[in-house]
Length: 120
Length: 110
Image (cartoon, chains in turn blue, yellow):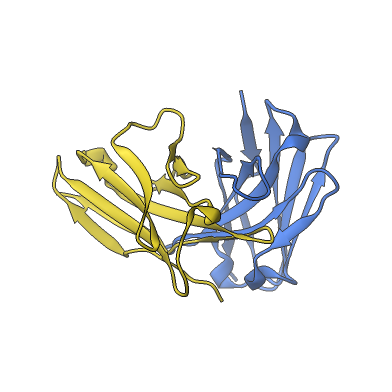
């Protein structure tokens, strides 16, 4: 069965970086894009960006340009999202989700979420 | 900057029908944006309800339906039940590999 299993909760200080992982199984890793979505406390869902597991091409929301880096390791079917220069507003649950199509797709499976807390 | 708009909150009586909408701050939503809808309850990942405007995801009851109404995407819940009380989000595929979520609608069933 399809699974996206994310890494555990993290606590980081302002200005630091955090890396969250998303390990895929149950399907051919290279046939689906992986997106990252977050939900901050009291806020709605927010799209962060996507990575194409074939070649590693990325698209990021303008808001996160320059602070986010998504990478993948095809040997372990794992995608990573690193967010740098953390601030308190980055405290959120981060989800990975897969999408089959570059345009016109939809999130059909989601990871369980990874809580990132930014606090001094 | 593109803003996707949703009603912040909505209320429906049990058994009633409610239509939530998803619009654009500038322009109209059409099927070319491939609108999809998600339900999220506290502590859980989102659940996919509708994709490509009006296709129901596997296992989603047929009382959930999607459409384009005027210049917006719409999610209609017919025969609302208590466990439909949740947050609902639309997301639009803006092209060039960019996606934007609406602000979400908090639905109360009472």
